[in-house]
Length: 121
Image 1 (cartoon, rainbow, N blue to C red):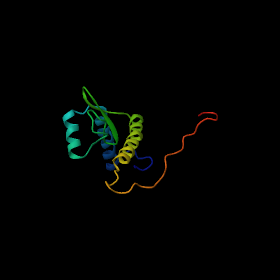
Image 2: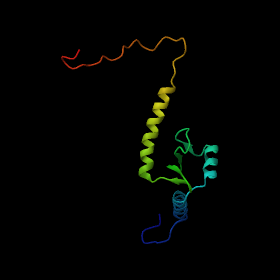
Image 3: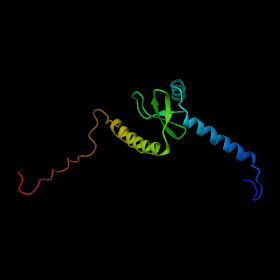
Image 4: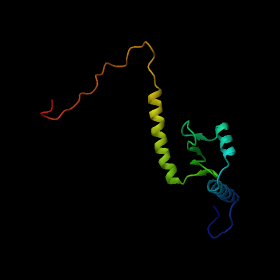
């Protein structure tokens, strides 16, 4: 930071402002579909799922497909998708954890008892 009373901006501050303004421009302009496809292919962006127009995470934001290209969601919407993406990841991991064929089942836990109301058959 510049010294108190000195309005000159340091080189590092200029570079940070330039980086922030460039990032802001990138987040407000539609990204061409071909550019997003390349980012996905290069591993620089990650799709939420394996379905058409799945939201994509790039530059700490989630992006959605639109007829104009890919549009960055705002911070609040990105935070909501982060929450759901974590749930999706956990659920996917749980369903993909297959038992080894021929191996004994894990634990002998019985299914939970069904509670009935008093007087019910």
